[in-house]
Length: 277
Image 1 (spheres, rainbow, N blue to C red):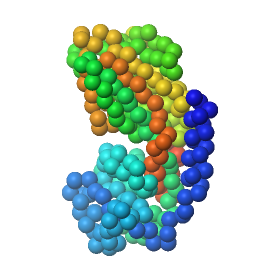
Image 2 (cartoon, rainbow, N blue to C red):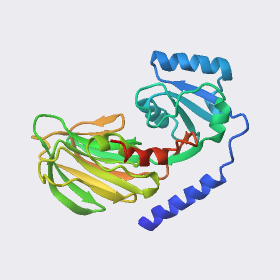
Image 3 (cartoon, one colour):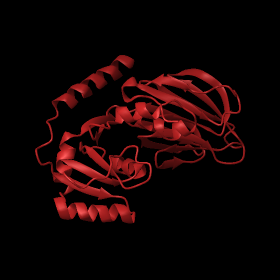
């Protein structure tokens, strides 16, 4: 299984190298969050650079914050379009600085970072099965006052027989600076091919701080005592309540490209975040 995943990764790397460079004047489409700032910015940029239909565009310019960037990535799955974000939100970790001048040139010179989502398969107490993708993380969270009890398997092998906690999450490298970092999980460089597995307010075992797993790993969470201790599973924007089993693995068949200004590529941002105090 691991060798197959690495073969897929190698094929994707070769495919990335074969992609032609953007044209001198890339055709842009502007998508914006519903906030006033983002909508007004979109109107000014369209007046200046025009707006290309989605099916004819070379690059999508996303205006908003990190949440809107995630929405845009989900919307564009299967379209093979790079996304250049400009921050019109709050944090903007996945966005470039907002600047209206020389936008086509900035986009053309930008460096690409390839993101692969996690694919979640969840089964509920009623036997229903749900599937969703996550570019940030898949998290399991207790639904009521009772702490959750969760058993964890990695590649079919039981690794933790009982985790008593508020929840647990597994994140992508890009998502490791989001909820994972807030839960005191490690930040992972994009090139590391690792997935952080991080508990949320662990009660037992109290000293377990999580694990770093290879990107080829399949993780299965089994919810113990689900009637007494109900658990919800969340993959980015998709929530599935009353789950009894959740399986998560990276889906390398999907590759989304984010574009970043050369002086602030995503890989540098992730490294720099580790030295922020």
